[in-house]
Length: 263
Image 1 (tube, helix red, strand yellow):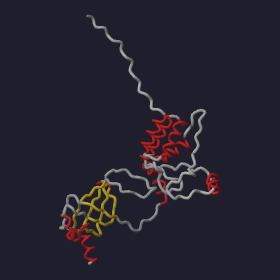
Image 2 (image 1 turned 180 degrees about the vertical axis):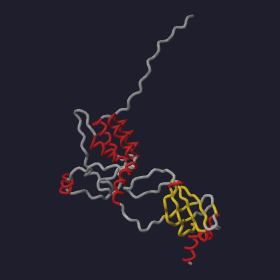
Image 3 (image 1 turned 180 degrees about the horizontal axis):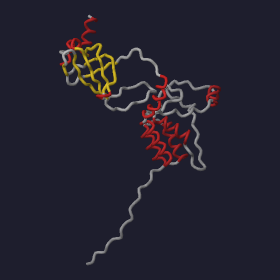
Image 4 (image 1 turned 30 degrees about the horizontal axis):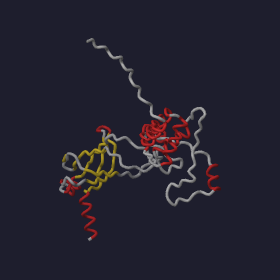
């Protein structure tokens, strides 16, 4: 019996997501769960098309990764959804025969008990010029910014730094000790400030022997941490910030001191 080869089946092409599926994907990516924004994302996808809407989503994620976008009055950062909507209504190009206008939420309170604007108030609001998109500040932009600012330098009369953490290897030089501490953590910064990179920063901490003697035993506790206050100075030869200690304690010593004062 002779086997006959079966005709090869053409490869199946992946089905492109529908407009509704694309809108749902965008809403989920932006973290939008409420009915109003999800419904408006559907409207945007229908007006701009799936390809342009996905491109706007990519732009949104890029803006958010670069530090986000401030509201025009600079009171806070836009949410990822807010960035997407702003891009859609200010830069989106509707498909032929379609229109896209920014919706008004006059009948949809943001929270319970929110007072609705009166008709004169609403008309006055509608007459206001459309806000310009906020300028997104990238950390790389600081170079040209600082070069411009340093053309007219100010005068820093007092400079202090506080370093909190565990010391590294202790090198005893007789009159002082030195240790190196490193930080990569970027704390939560006030809204509006640019976000620096998480490149490690080294601190070469110099502590006089008399001050070190006050905390030497306490810092032997691995659960304790130094609190160093001092004068910082850039030390480019060792790629570190030198900290010349003016006051030093530890977290546990400070807590014990507060407790003794309260008794």
